Image (cartoon, rainbow, N blue to C red):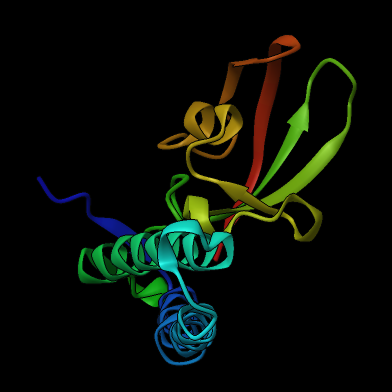
Amino acid sequence: MSNISYYNKEGLEKLKEDLNLLTTVERSKISKMIAEARDKGDLSENAEYDAAKEAQGLLELKISKLQDLISNARVLDESKLDTSKVLLLSTVTIKNLKSGAIMKYTIVPESEADLKSGKLSVTSPISKGILGKKIGEKIEVQVPAGIVPFEIIDISR
């Protein structure tokens, strides 16, 4: 079963850059580590060799997961997205009706989430609560601290 993930163009390019780094730079580093450890003699009692082989296994697993992510990635054309409701890649201004705080977030794929720069994961409780909602709608979102009421103030790209 494939898990299709949606990205903007920059997000997909970042994944491809990460994969390229792992396959070209990191793979050769680990190969050198294995060769150096192998040159030190008896492999049955060589902790360096075992550590290098384990690192190689973990790296190959990372590479495999990234390749799978990229092969199932789809790029969203932000210019064609509907701004009448909250969707992936929407920039949303919401108001916490309890505290009066106004927050602005861009809903992004999980791998691109960065709360400090206002990028909220599509899998977060707040994102799940506001997806599909329209400007002016009031919703209650279950977050770890309890239920928080929000109002959608604005939706843009």
